[in-house]
Image (cartoon, rainbow, N blue to C red; front, side):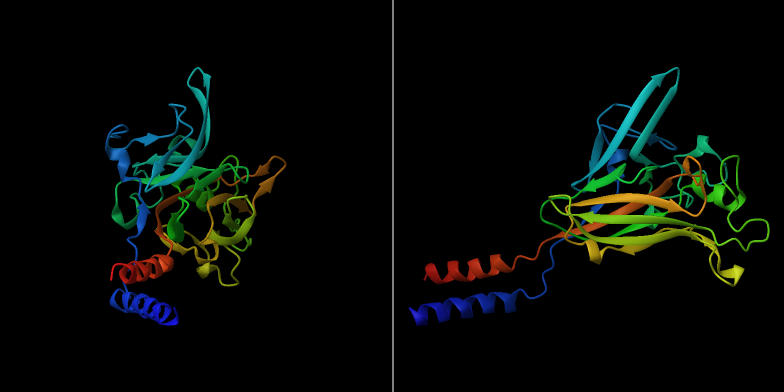
Length: 267
């Protein structure tokens, strides 16, 4: 019996040595599905949940959406939208579906964007076996131009002198299958807190954000916070853009052991 166990161990170790660096293929939610049926979005278009589907899938992950039609061309939505809008110059709410980059991550056509005024409005549900790696984050044109120039509702970041320590922050919270928190990641979409005003910035490109601290989460929940707050809450437009959420299956260490045992039983 001890000899048999030793052989099983050796076979398992041998399998591990033969296949030491065969990483599982990464899954990527890149939203390029929106160029194909059933969506088939044309150039300069967007999907905002007006079909009452409640969300959509990309790369095996689920992106929530809530849409309400009030009639008379009035509506509201929250959660995720998908878009290939490219307008980086038009300010205001009417341009709420454009990323400030003008393109998707890595120059792709499609990307996602979120409206999330309240924490939990926006979330992503991951496949059970997913180990989360990273995602790309950017500003929307609506939010970026509001921070850079100010508008009817929001202040110009930095104020008239440029010295106001303004900021706009995305908070990504990882949750397990019981909605218990497993970790958080913070990313500043704008930061004017530097003593040297030349270092102040509003993000104008896609930035890869590592998600190691929430890698085991089954759900990602998103919230936005800003230094510009009024009686009704945050004044900064509560939008951000996202692309290329990357995750991989869990390592199959147990599979290697089972394979080693199977090789022994077949002898």
